[in-house]
Amino acid sequence: MKIGYRILRLFSQVVFITVFRGRAFGVRRVPRTGGVLLVCNHQSFLDPILATCVIPRECNYMARDTLFHHPLLGPLISYLNSFPVKRGTADLGAIRETLRRLKDGKVVLTFPEGTRTVDGQIGPMRAGVVLLARKTRVPIVPVLILGAFETWPRTAKLPRPHPILIAYDEPLYPHQHPEWTDAQCVTTVRDRLLALQRRFERHSMLR
Image (cartoon, rainbow, N blue to C red; front, side, top):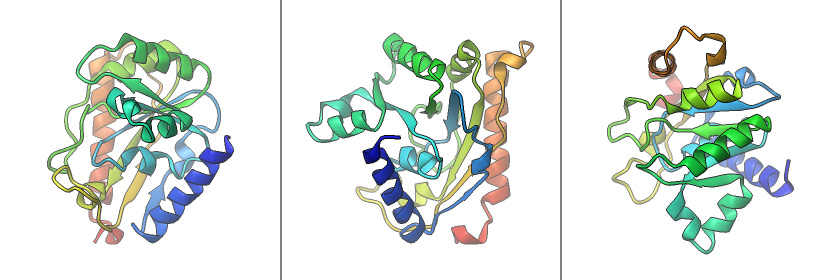
């Protein structure tokens, strides 16, 4: 693990625990070796950090291509294993890069809703992530974020302190289920996230 990634991850963990009173559940469900596709709901700008700061592996991120044009942010997110994707298009370059990293045994974070939620709920998910998992024969790990919408909704310019909870579900292996269509598989992932949401949304730490 790169020393800069390690330092920033430690800093993120401190902020997660002290500022946002963060709690994480099921981290051990993320495989410790091999390629992994994290499929996460999307509540705020903080989500890439929140979804991965407690994972003891270096992670990789899809990021909007315009972010790489910033003179300071661009080099930073590149160093932190981000790669550009053009939103609203079938970005073949980003797809190939995702496949390459998964085949190389890396952890890649995705947000198949495509954009941040407008009301805190989990929206429809695109089935393309299933194809990525099938082609590389890697597991999908559903990741739920709760509390980040209240921390930094789309309408707010800056975040505010609010409890945040992260939960990881059991891995799914799409390549082991050829009878599933991609749509059925991504629906299963979303159902898993909704079940986690129902389980944790009344958790005392979120109040």
